[in-house]
Structure formats: structure tokens, C-alpha cells
Length: 168
Image 1 (cartoon, rainbow, N blue to C red):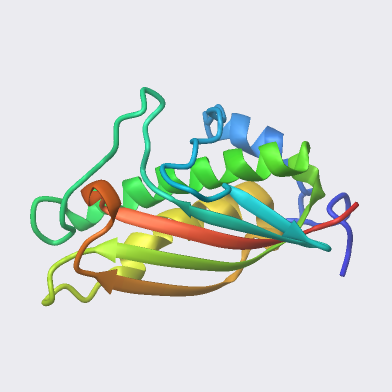
Image 2 (image 1 turned 180 degrees about the horizontal axis):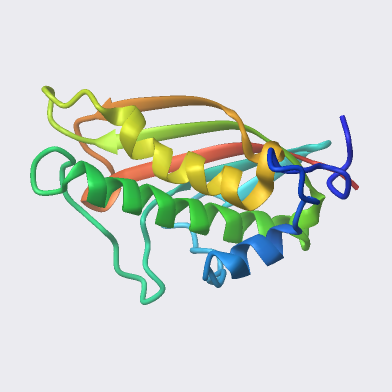
């Protein structure tokens, strides 16, 4: 696999640094959200970085809550998943010290707070998946599961966790 400096976009343009991509998207990384219980935000084993579940926490600490397909529209939930992706990237940055060390987003696991008749979980989790590809290019494409659940902590609309491969 090519290293980050040689990857190109499908347009053939040179790959942009993840920080440049974030800036181009108008995204400023927040501080990583603190754990809400007795767990770590991340654990690294060798080259694999495991990120604990994050939710749609805004910079002021408030959370997007509610059931998707009910009080929360699919479009709003997509935005919530995108915000959760920003929070995951903030944890990646804190864990690695440099987002250029992200070799690959390996896996994304998404939980959507919804009723039993809701079945469009992939559309919601795309909010984070799309962001990872926008920020990391080809290295952001990943394996994924999107699962509907009856409840999530603090009634958040989505919770996402990720597995990342990092380089030295």
C-alpha cells in the first residue's frame, strides 16, 4: 500500500493532508470528548487503534438526542453521525499526535437509536463514512456495520466506534 504522501484522489490531484482537508471543509477539531463512564477513549495494540463509542456531542457539551425516524429525521441523523465522526477524528488526533499517522480506517460500527420499524440505518451512518473519505481520501474507505437499537446512553441519536490502523 502506498504511504499517505503518494495517495491521490480519483481526480488525479495530489492527496491533501488530512488537516488541509479538514480546513477546506471548514472543520476545526474540538477537544476529544471525555469518557462518560469507566472506559478509555482509545486503546492502541501494535498498529491498531481502537476508538470507543462516541456520540453527537456539540462543542458546548450538549448532545443531539432522540429517535431517528421519529423526532429525528434521517437528514438530521446523518448530520449527527457526521458530527460524531468529527469527534472520532478528534480522538484519533489526540491518540496519534498527528492525523498523518492514520494509515487506514479499518472498520466503523454504527448504532442508530430508532424504533422497530426504521430500516434506513446505512443512510444515517453514511454521515460519518462520507466524512472519513472526505478527510482521509482512499485511506478513509472502510468496512462497516450499521445497526438499529432501541436505546443509547443519554438518548443520543447515534453512537459510532472505529478501528484505525496507524503507522509509526
